[in-house]
Amino acid sequence: MVKMEIELNKEVRAVLVENLKRYYWNDRNEELNNLGAELLLDFIVNDIGPYIYNKAVEDSYDYMNERTEDLLGLQKRLR
Image (cartoon, rainbow, N blue to C red; front, top):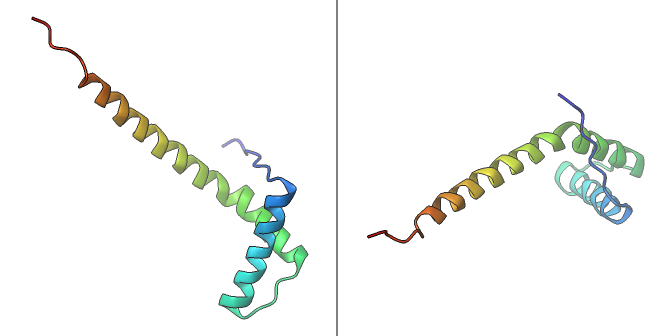
């Protein structure tokens, strides 16, 4: 499998780091520092992200195939 690079802009990355820190504090009762949150985010994006991305591509493909098949229903009947 080719490792894909998912790049997050600085603003999105900052929001996600804060979300991870908040999650750890609220749900796990643990404090997660910025470095820990950034490393966890890198793991999620690089190791888990491709699976989520691929599932989204598959779902989009299935959706588009269904819509394409619907187009055939629009054909006019020939006499």
